[in-house]
Image (cartoon, rainbow, N blue to C red; front, side, top):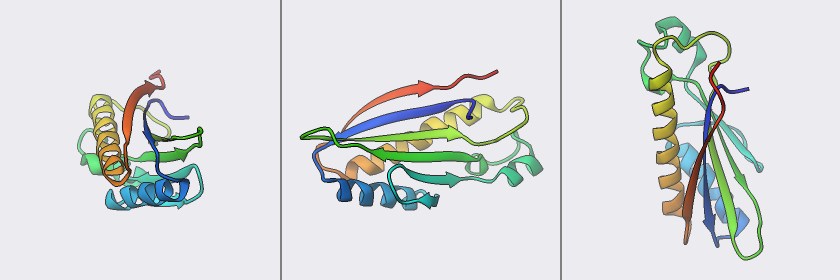
Length: 134
C-alpha cells in the first residue's frame, strides 16, 4: 500500500475506446512503463534501484518510483476518467525527501491530467489526495 497518493477525475463525453487511447497516449508521452492496458490502465515510472543507490535526497525526481493508474467508468451521458499517482517506493523511510516526493507526484499528476484533457473533448477536472504517512 502506498504511503500517499493523489487522484484527479476528468469527466468527458468521449466514448470508452477514445478515453483508453488518450490515457495510453498520455502515459506514453510521460515515458511510463505500461503494465496493463485494460481498465484500470496501470503503469510505473522511476526506479527503486536508482532511488536506493543514490538515496532519496540525491536521486533526481524522475527516478522516484511511482505507480500510475487510469480508470474509465461509464455514467450515462458522460464518462469519468480517474487518474491516480501513488508513491511506489516500497519499504524504508523517505528521510528528508518526502516533501520532494509528494511535490513530484502532484506535478506528475497535473502533467498527466493536462495531457489527457487536451486529448479528450469537454474534459473537466476535480482533485483529491489520499493516503497517510506513518
